[in-house]
Image 1 (cartoon, rainbow, N blue to C red):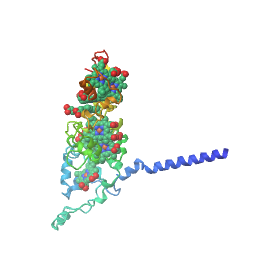
Image 2: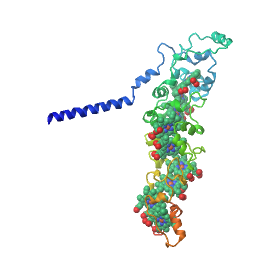
Image 3: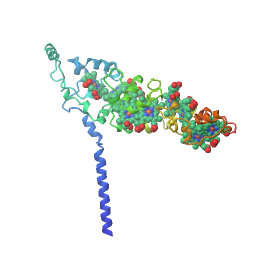
Image 4: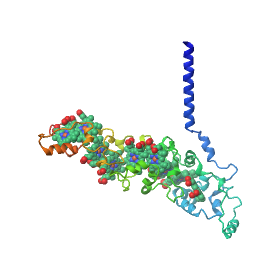
Length: 331
Ligand code: HEC
Ligand code: HEC
Ligand code: HEC
Ligand code: HEC
Ligand code: HEC
Ligand code: HEC
Ligand code: HEC
Ligand code: HEC
Ligand code: HEC
């Protein structure tokens, strides 16, 4: 009996241990210092400054101009003469890349119809870095203290799902480093195809019309709330704009206390008013239908079989009692 128990214990222990191994293997979490090594650049290279970096070459003039016109570049590199954000802040030390690149060589190559490239393989290979390392480059400066809305970044779904800062912020696409409101939905849609489809349903929040924006409800940088919502509950998310549905009402519809999702799809729906289910079936999920007059009245039958809210028009809540003195959401 005893030996069998020990055998059983060993078997379970080995199962648990192998179980843990597989979990570890499938999720490649590596210590942060490994990512730090990836973004250090070549240790035998020196920092030379943007001006030296680009002095012999005009191939990157556009990048440089945009960069100088951006918040990140202009504030520190040029006007204030404090070269804190340089090309090398992200690309790593550049002395090896420009070794032997003189204006004379560039001119000579140009005469021969060639474009001189720097030895960019000695720089950090930004394109193939893991997402965590890419983001770490930005987080060197954009700490949670410096950029307040990044204080939940590490716990956010995007960071956890291998999305990097530069997947959303195209650093060299122009001088505007932020994601402009006008282009936000398009940018998010690249990865969120289901969401895109929801916003093209007949009833939808006017996101494609650019009157409501993804970040009115979500914080792409991470949030302690479910689904990256800016507010702790769905109801609070909605009542930012639909304050009249918030209550408290003298007569509150029981289902309108916590979550608007019982009846509404936040992005879009094939039914009017973003309803999850078309009325009367929406209501009939929880209530029995009823008569309000003589059974023979065709009008009455039609009404109760179509839209309950034709009569129960204040379905979210009301302060006005119905004829019987109760809260029936009639007016
Ligand atoms: C804030 C960080 C940052 C700074 C500062 C920066 N870059 Fe970049 N750069 C990046 C990232 C990230 C990429 C990779 C983009 C991608 O993922 O395709 C990149 C890509 C590039 C590329 C390759 C572009 C391509 O389309 O293949 C060049 C060239 C370049 N940078 C030049 C510069 C120059 C010149 C400067 C300084 C004037 C500079 N960068 C400053 C982050 C930066
Ligand atoms: C060497 C430091 C440094 C690095 C590295 C850096 N930034 Fe910045 N960034 C700044 C500074 C300084 C500003 C301007 C001040 C501010 O707005 O916080 C800025 C501004 C910005 C802004 C514009 C903010 C606005 O209000 O217009 C964005 C967006 C941004 N950075 C994104 C990035 C991304 C993405 C990366 C990584 C690819 C990155 N930064 C890497 C220092 C840095
Ligand atoms: C999923 C897309 C996405 C990712 C990933 C992302 N951002 Fe942003 N970021 C945005 C959008 C959209 C805005 C503009 C709207 C806003 O203020 O929320 C923005 C705004 C910013 C701003 C300006 C903030 C301000 O308060 O004015 C900075 C700085 C910034 N991001 C830095 C970063 C850094 C650093 C990272 C990586 C650690 C990052 N972002 C990752 C989408 C993203
Ligand atoms: C009016 C507020 C609102 C707007 C605007 C909005 N969302 Fe949402 N979104 C929500 C709510 C609420 C949820 C949670 C839904 C749920 O759990 O059923 C959600 C969920 C999501 C999810 C998770 C879906 C899932 O099934 O897990 C993604 C992804 C998403 N939104 C992306 C976006 C994108 C991209 C945009 C802009 C194009 C956007 N949202 C605009 C409110 C909004
Ligand atoms: C580079 C691809 C990419 C871009 C761009 C992107 N996302 Fe995501 N997003 C993801 C991935 C990956 C996940 C996690 C898997 C999933 O839920 O689909 C995710 C998850 C989410 C979720 C669900 C969070 C949760 O906890 O379930 C929301 C909400 C969301 N993203 C909003 C946005 C918004 C808003 C934007 C634009 C500002 C955006 N995303 C841009 C890749 C992206
Ligand atoms: C940023 C402001 C904002 C937030 C947050 C917001 N809405 Fe809206 N909502 C709007 C606007 C704007 C309209 C369009 C009104 C119009 O066209 O007159 C709208 C329309 C609606 C409609 C009517 C749709 C139709 O087809 O006529 C419903 C239902 C709705 N919202 C529910 C919600 C719910 C549920 C939430 C929370 C998940 C929410 N709203 C969050 C701004 C917002
Ligand atoms: C019990 C189901 C139910 C719940 C829960 C619910 N709604 Fe509604 N909502 C409806 C119905 C039904 C309509 C359509 C009314 C009509 O036909 O006139 C509607 C319409 C709306 C409209 C558009 C018409 C108008 O009156 O402005 C908005 C906005 C709205 N709801 C917001 C919300 C918000 C915000 C919440 C959460 C606080 C919420 N709803 C919770 C059932 C519900
Ligand atoms: C998810 C379930 C659910 C849905 C969907 C729902 N309700 Fe309700 N409703 C309730 C609950 C729970 C109460 C509180 C019952 C109570 O206090 O006896 C209630 C109360 C009511 C009352 C007051 C009844 C009373 O006895 O005081 C009316 C009227 C009502 N609902 C109408 C509607 C209509 C119309 C719809 C569709 C637009 C609807 N409800 C959708 C769950 C729901
Ligand atoms: C022709 C108008 C009308 C229509 C349509 C209608 N109702 Fe009513 N409903 C009333 C009136 C009037 C009362 C009683 C009000 C009072 O007690 O003062 C009532 C009461 C109720 C009550 C509380 C009394 C009870 O029976 O428990 C519920 C629940 C209810 N309705 C649900 C619904 C649902 C669900 C629908 C759609 C299938 C619906 N109603 C359609 C007018 C209507």
